Structure formats: structure tokens, C-alpha cells
Length: 492
Image (cartoon, rainbow, N blue to C red; front, side, top):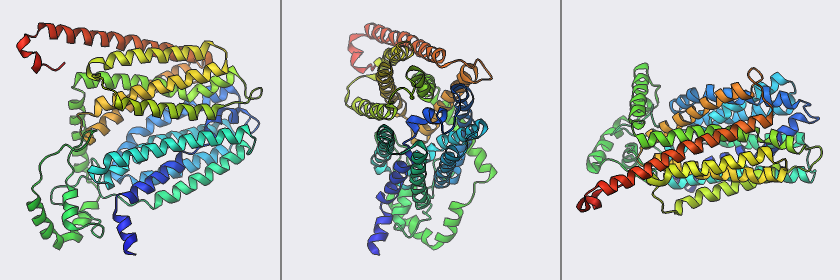
């Protein structure tokens, strides 16, 4: 019994549960074959219905849910939203399994947009239950397990389809079972007693989970210092004073615990929103952060559009009725290549503040070239290879962008910038979807769509290549104009 209590109080307990949840909720064997399933005999929908009426709903749902879910996640302290995400994921899979009409599929996409918006709870939960010194390790575990889940799902789906082991219907039943396991696991997650914005612990405030930690350790953990991507960066704490406060506060533990978990009043919400607005203005007053964020929003918009509709392109190039499709294998390879490029960038010694914008432009240009090949070379293997290249390049660049943006930000401000950039990407994506894809707009076929996406990335490449060249020219000009005796003090 004592061993169980010690295990539950250790940081590995919530991390393990969250990793189990992350794995089972992301194993989706049917996802690489969603378009063939919808247009096949199971649903018997047309390409135009799926492309122009059903798929666009996800974008609108994601955009409308992102801000409310972001705020509610912090206010409710993460766990309720994690459970809610899994419940909605179960509903999405059930609707995909048992409903057939276009309105039902649109509702399914709406729910899936809510699931996607709720992912912020998965990535934020761990920071509220793990000590600061464990942040990096816990984050790497959670992200790696999620990537493993996507890869296993893609490989499993490919094997089941290629060897005709299960029908699409039975694959969805298997997905429901996996989602149920994730749902049961999410209910076992410990309830956090803090959050980034609405439930910050104040100095001298004791933790509500008194039975798990000693009073002194709980009080010391209650002061949250701001952290950078590499580790901790905070203010000095007077330990002796805090230990004295902890002893005094033991007499009032019950009252403080109730006070700690009570709902935020209107005045508190107003203060939090004002603080978010002030942080927003200060963050984006940095010109370098602004440029990187603009690329983040623009590139993520184009990436999401490409990934969302690439199955439609593959079906156009090589119909699944005439060809043994390998969508799952391609997704698995692209995930592994993306992980390898993102991991490898951590070992490069490049001054990204100087060369980063040029790299954004150059690699975005390569991504645009891959999209043009996918669009105009009517060969499925060229499409597959180009997709792997495109996805790997995006993951490489977004990793660099995340590092550059997060390097000098606190965790709270990084979460704000992360959410703002994703909201900007979704706003752009909504405009493109409503104009280009939606049947209420132009309702273009898949080849004109991908021509626009490739041209869009070409525009990004030109824009940031010019900006990068200007940055390099300005740095060299500044270096030549600096007196020799002060060169050592100038950092370009």
C-alpha cells in the first residue's frame, strides 16, 4: 500500500497515464483511408460532397472552438477537457461508423474540429502536475508517445487494408475500443490544483493535495517561476521564510484548499484577460518574434490545407478501386521522417537569428516545388514521395520557429503566442476554405486547389527569402560600420 502511495505521488504516475491516453487516442487505423471509406460502398458519397461540403466543416469548427476551449481548459484545470476530448472523439468515431448522410458527416466533422481544438489540454496538463525540473522530460515522453500512436495507427491500418484482414467497418469498431481505453484512462488522471492563468498559486499558498507531499515541499512547489525552452528561469525564493509560512499555514490547510479550488470570480477573469492582452502586446512588440509568427501562421495554414485534402488528390491520381493504395504506409514514413528532421535540428550549430528567415524562405520554396510535383505529375508514387518531403520540410521549419519564439519567453507567454499563431493560421485557413473549397464559394476541383496551395507556398518562399537576404545584408553592413575596437561587443 505504501508503494502505491509513493508511486501515485511521483511525477511518473500522471505522466504515464497521460502517455497511455495520448497513445490510445491517436491510434486511428482508418484515418489514412478516410476518403476511400467515405466514397466507397460503405457511405457511397461523391467526391464533390466530401471535398466541397464535408471536409470544410472541420476548419470552421476548429476556428470557432479554439478560443473558448483554450480559456475553458485553463479555467477548468485541464483534466475535464481531456476527458471531454475523448468523449467527443468517441462520438465522432461512432457517427463515422453508424451514420451515412451528408448532414451527419458534416456533424461528424464539426465534432472532430472540437476534438482538435481540445488538444491544448493534452499538452498543457502535464505542466500543472509535474515539477519544473521535469518539464522537458515529461514533454518529450508525451510528444513521442503521441507520434508513436499516429505511426502505429497508420502502419496498422495499412496492414489491415493491404492484407484484407478487416473491413473498413471493423477497423472503426477497433478504433472505438481503443478510444474507450483512452477514455477510461483519462478518468484516472489526477486533478490538477493549478493552471497557467486562472488558478496560479500565490507565494505562501499550500497545495490542496496535502496527502501527497510534505507541507514545505508543497509550498516551495507552489511558487511558479517563468521558464524558457531550455529550463528554469525565475526569481530567487527565500526558503527559510517559506518554511515558516508553511508551518503557520498547516493550521488553516482546509480553508486554504477550499479557497484554492474555488471558481474564479468576474473580477479575477477580467484581470486575467487584461494580463493576457498586456502579454500579447509585449510579445508581438518584438519584430523578430513577429516575423517568425507570421511565417508560423501562414505555413501552418497551407500545411493544414494540404494534409486535409491530400487523400482527395491521391484518389484523383490513382483511384483506390484500381490500385492497392498505401496511404497508411506513406503517413507512417512521413511521421518518422518528420520526427527525424525535427530531432536532428537540435544538433545543428546555426545562428538562426541571422540565417533563419532565409532558411524559412528556401525550404518553403522546396515545399512549394514538392506540391507542384504532386499536382502536375500524374503518378501516385511521385505524389507519395513529394508528400513525405513536403511534410518533413514543414516539421523541420516549425521546430526551428518554435525554438526561436520560445527561447526567451515564459511558459505562460509561450502558450499565449502558440495559441495566437494557431488562431491566425486557422483564420487564414477559413478564408481559403470558404473561397476555394467550400461549395458556397468557388468549390474548385482538387487539381486547381493544389495549384493554389503550391502557389501560396511559393509566395511564402519569395517573401521570406527577400526578408532573409535583407537581414543578412543589414547584419554585414552593421558589422562593417562598427569600429574595430567594439566588434567584440556587437552581437548580430
